[in-house]
Amino acid sequence: MSGPAASRPPAARRPRRHDPGRRDRLIDAARTVIAERGVAGTTHREIARVADVPLGSMTYHFASLEEVLIEAFTRHADAVAGVFDERLEAAWDRDAAIEAVITLVSEDLLGSQHDLVLTVELYVAAARNPALRAVTQAWMQRSRQALERHFDATTARELDALIEGLVLHSALSTDPMTPEQIRHAIHRHLR
Amino acid sequence: MSGPAASRPPAARRPRRHDPGRRDRLIDAARTVIAERGVAGTTHREIARVADVPLGSMTYHFASLEEVLIEAFTRHADAVAGVFDERLEAAWDRDAAIEAVITLVSEDLLGSQHDLVLTVELYVAAARNPALRAVTQAWMQRSRQALERHFDATTARELDALIEGLVLHSALSTDPMTPEQIRHAIHRHLR
DNA sequence: CTATGATATGTACGTCCGTACGTATCGTGA
DNA sequence: TCACGATACGTACGGACGTACATATCATAG
Image 1: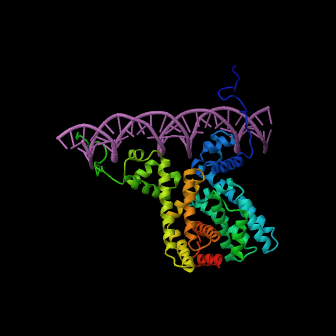
Image 2: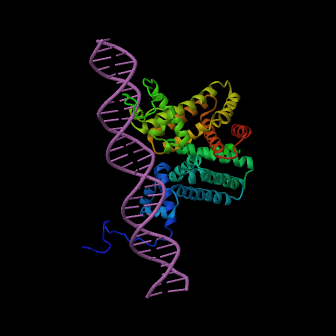
Image 3: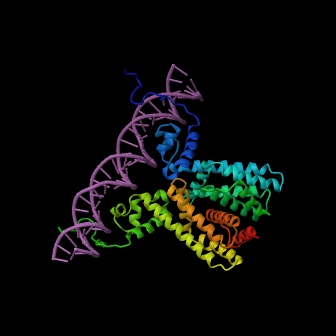
């Protein structure tokens, strides 16, 4: 029992070399870790564990932990903003746009606790990291532009803020708002 | 050079014994540290440094770091909710209540970056800590009750969410909403 | 086939952390 | 006065962390 490469680990699936796209998988693993453990609990080792790669792989693909966080949050913001764009792009008139917003809040945004937590984590991190502040800025601007397809600039900005508040309050509450309540609030502001 | 108690530290103000209310000062120091460094950067050592007490003092007054965080966030929520209460209690009619809300948002809430950051930090922490979730729940309920002095329950809840969104968007934006824009948004929802 | 650069892997180092704990000093009631 | 509980203080321990780096292995161009 002295195989050439049968040293310490159980020799289970060890030869996992040649893994193109590993960097991408690591960024996604980081998103999972941030959502589950928070930025505070996000470490090189935990991300590597989740992605099932050795620790050394982290320092090869990223210059620092901060770089990982920036990539992860950027991807998150892009994903959510993308859904936002699609919903509003598909709306053919103002009434359809209102329905799109209601769907966005009650299904897309409130539907995923994972994404919700990630968003708040981003807000906190952005408060102290200029690079992440730029990410949130770009995201907010993109959302507003999507809304401006159907609403004037002032309304778009107010609606964006209302959406934020509705989502956050529902997310933090043990008694979240129902889709009907959300519909009521949005219609009331736009009435 | 063998004084009985003149060992290492410069022997500057060392005899700081008998410090009643030290526990309170530590909780306030924790609030400062959380606001400046985030929950992630909040450590026993940093709090002790800010409060200018030895590290050992932390473990004497608190059973764990989590206990410090809970006390600090509880105090923060109470403080903000207190201002909320006062403003709305002083309003004699609905119009005055609307003005009170506008003042709350544009002066009290947006006026202190310190409190703002603390609030978002609480939201994130609450996502993973049931004790802190209870703190946010009680806070939200208290805010809504204050609003219900002047508005019906549905309106109070919507208004509370709108306030949250306005504050958060202004706080995160490099181009925050002006008091006039905030006034416009609130009046529009209540018109 | 072979050289070479890209990628992958394991480990070690120095730092900071939460917490525990022994000792020193104080206020206060008996 | 003096004993004793409350409070204050300094330090040490084990562990987790970010990062660096030497080595191993792969894909592929020539």
